[in-house]
Image 1 (tube, helix red, strand yellow):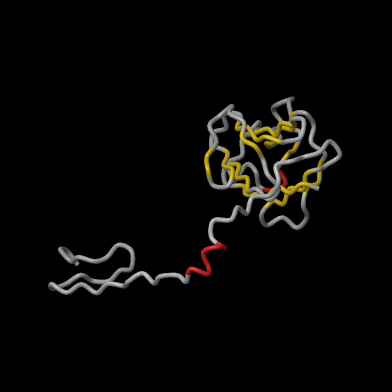
Image 2 (tube, one colour):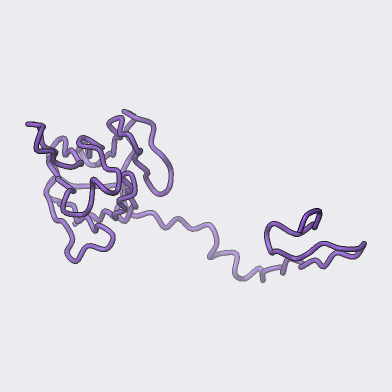
Length: 155
């Protein structure tokens, strides 16, 4: 209805001078020690380790030993260059994955993820990466290439 005021969070109609409010419940201080603990996995990645990549809605994970640079993307019959990890079987084109979308770079004891200037962006744990700026990968991180979501684990 035109001119009707309502709370955008809960949908409660705001009429008259009395507005129904919900107070915040104070947590017991004993529970504070569980708040704020990091749930990040390790960033250490040894030379013998491999990557397990779980693509959302895929039956089987992808297991690979990363090279110094492992490109992620989708194959294109018109291009001779192919990504090291072709995500075409996972609906990459429909989900906005570029042909050369991102790279996983292997350092001495870490892996980093770099967006290669992709059209639909690369996200690491919900944060969009700035193209060509490496970000450290950790065991259990979520990677999103366009709308293709996967989790990376170190083995």
